[in-house]
Length: 124
Image (tube, rainbow, N blue to C red; front, top):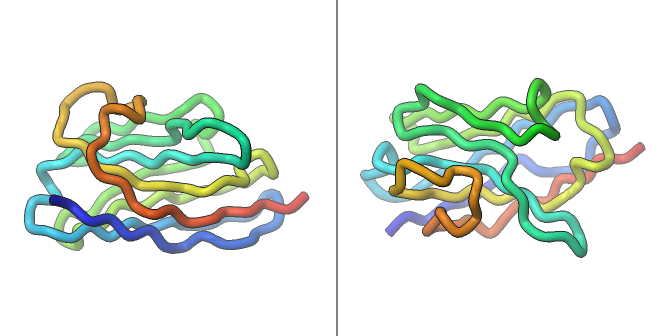
């Protein structure tokens, strides 16, 4: 069982930056690949970024590639999402998620554990 708590969301102007954090409970954090997803109002939840257990490989959606960076600190049981050059279309609730699987990182159905989400609003 893994419990996830996101923080760091807020209101920012277009072109600004935010850093999201996701703190995980439990001693087996390094056993899980981690992902960030987002869900805008009226839309389906979509993949944003993923990172393997060791942090050696990362994955991004085309819409955020080059602007967002996912990282993790296994000693602190925390995964981060650095978001730069934010756009109004990045406005959404952002969720972190954990999966014990070594495949399907971009798919919602691959993840077993989810946080409650943190709101990110980008004003134009």
